[in-house]
Picture 1 (cartoon, rainbow, N blue to C red):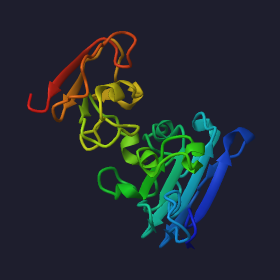
Picture 2 (spheres, helix red, strand yellow):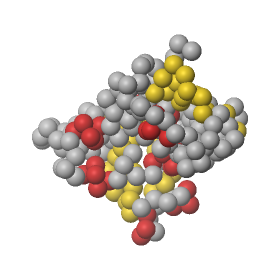
Picture 3 (cartoon, one colour):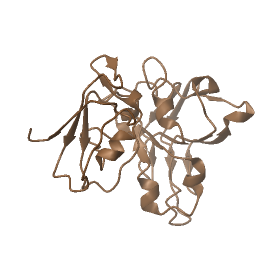
Picture 4 (cartoon, rainbow, N blue to C red):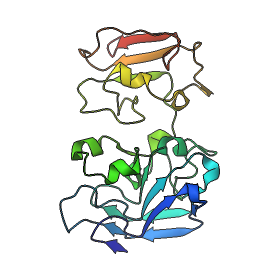
Length: 239
């Protein structure tokens, strides 16, 4: 299966959940599927080698998105994914659903930290923005990420590195640090945990690790109004 003029080598779906629609893959293998964009240089083409899925107005897991029955073998898209590409505003929340987390986007046979993480990718902002020509290529790219980190909790260490080009949703991992401490404060606390439990606002201490000198920050105020609550420990990578 091949798409040479846009997105979705195997399947292209644009679904609005408010109309009662749903999309579930019960058992399908996408093998040697490709998505390229040979018609022009538009960066919005060449995604979703197996499945390209746009989801509009998704609220919760009851709204009928389940891709767990898909398997991707030797698929490749021009823009880097090797199976699935989702365009969805609440994509991080979808990744956090299920038991185990990631149940509804994880493909058959996918193993955390073993499988090629590029099999599952997505755009984490509004579909309108993805389709709009008002965004520059650089603005678009900053909201594209692999899905695996978005179903993993980050623990109690959040990493900051001012030299990164930009912050994307779900930042805080050492391999994907936030650009500023402010960016980390905006993250949904459900993404983080201490050991086997969720982070508890105003109770737990969060370690913010600076990977380099942070010249972008002048003052930091931690109080009840912040996402983190009242307690934070801030240190450099050297201790």
